[in-house]
Length: 179
Image 1 (cartoon, helix red, strand yellow):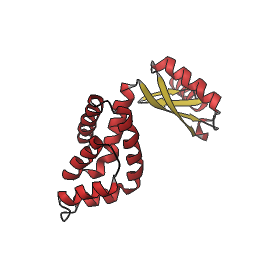
Image 2: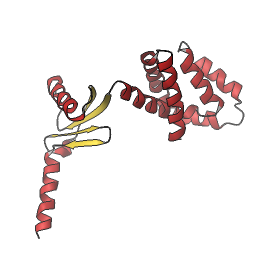
Image 3: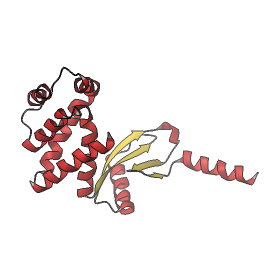
Image 4: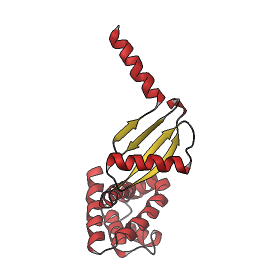
């Protein structure tokens, strides 16, 4: 389903650029994604129910997703027609990736032993911008007592590990090699 979600996201992204509504599309789609996450299984059952013909699924889109832009609604209609409403979140994640790429930004998770202050997070963000070449990073701080100290940061698929836990693991490996 990931490839299918990417195709929907790519089409929506291209339409957003053509119609100059990329930010509006992202904002509205983010709200929809957040709203449907708890109902993924119900949407899957709704998609798979043979009694729900395409017309019923489109009526569901009309009733559920009012006051959204026409391009996003059209994509939801296509998802409904193809019994793919359950992949709305996957489509959003793929769209989000394209959106972030467009603005040269990405999400980053900063793991630490304690909650970092806004100033500390700003410093981490500045460091990540220098290392990655991104113009902006959107940081989330997660508490991970197993790190013992230091930080572990994940940006996309890259991990920058400056934790004491990582140092101890590397030290243990060096000792193991010298035996």
